[in-house]
Amino acid sequence: MTQAPARETVGTRPPSPRWVYAEGADPDPRFSLANERTFLAWIRTTLALVAGGVALEGLDLAFHPGLRAAAALLLLAMGVCLPFVAYAQWGRVERALRRAEPLPANHTGLVVAAGTVLVTALLAASLLPW
Amino acid sequence: MVTPFDPGLQPERTALSWQRAATAFTVAGLVVLRCSAHLGTLPVVAACCALVLAAVAGWTGGRRRRAVREALAQDRHPGGGAALLLLALLTAAAAALGAVAVLAGTSAGGPA
Image (cartoon, rainbow over all chains, first blue to last red; front, side):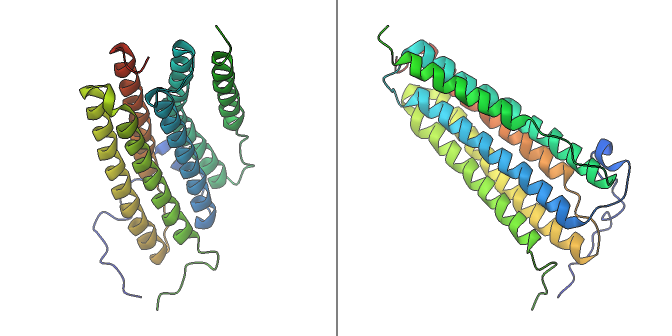
């Protein structure tokens, strides 16, 4: 295959972030790429929550306005927080791969599930005759 | 003919995953535009900003695909922390823009 001309900076640039790359040895790239795809899957989950939150409020659905707004803002609040949680988890996994340690546990799914249940409960409550 | 890096096509799957993320980003931006356009000027501005962020996400994915290919061809580790942090920031910003659109719509009297 044709080799792309190497830039001067390639290889000399310190890998970022330091808290991930400071220790250990480069793992099998396939593991790192799988870790990257897991992060990207969380990003897509986040974007779905954001789209859901905006659509809930924007489509003028027949829910109690206050409870509906609370559900929408809860979805959007998860949307603001989740990317950083996903990035931190990516870094922890990458660091564990570099140190050849067991992979850290991830409780993000439980939190997102709890948030989704709460959103559903708010919407279900808003269907009651108030 | 390009010999694949591994039979599991990991770089290709990762590039496709970036593409799906960029597509989801665009769809989310369009949802914001479609669902809050009738709520006033501020939601429309927020939606357009989100669509600009989606374009940046797609551009980041393209750059990342080339960086991974280049690194693997030179037998280096693909790294990737900076690109992932950028995408995390873009996504959080899009969520904040969605919140702006919703709050602007609600305070403007909106659909309620």
